Length: 137
Ligand code: SF4
Ligand code: SF4
Image (cartoon, rainbow, N blue to C red; front, side, top):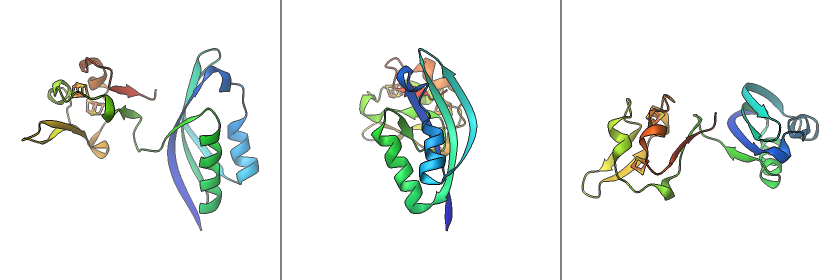
């Protein structure tokens, strides 16, 4: 049975001329839909893609990406929140229009990120003093 997975790929300058997308198609028999792409030779690139294929081939394809210098973000949005770097200062929560970034526990005042609520407005990027939020694009 064919299944489909969305992923965001981030890769460094050394990978901009490597044919890893055609490898996924040829070696793992995956169908690749590219929704958004930004590739800058000498700097690196980002791809928003959807991969479809048999589950074992999909797993092997993702393992292949893990083994090369490609960072895979398999969430539904291109916003990345590095929880381990968050100081829970709550500054972003007052600027997030959908409460995707919110105080989950009023006692501990710890901030959480609910990816399904994020509309990728990117407001949190400029309101986090610690660079915890970043956009794949
Ligand atoms: S990108 Fe916008 S909606 Fe998403 S977490 Fe940041 S402020 Fe909230
Ligand atoms: S502004 Fe940055 S450090 Fe502060 S709670 Fe939000 S993500 Fe964490």
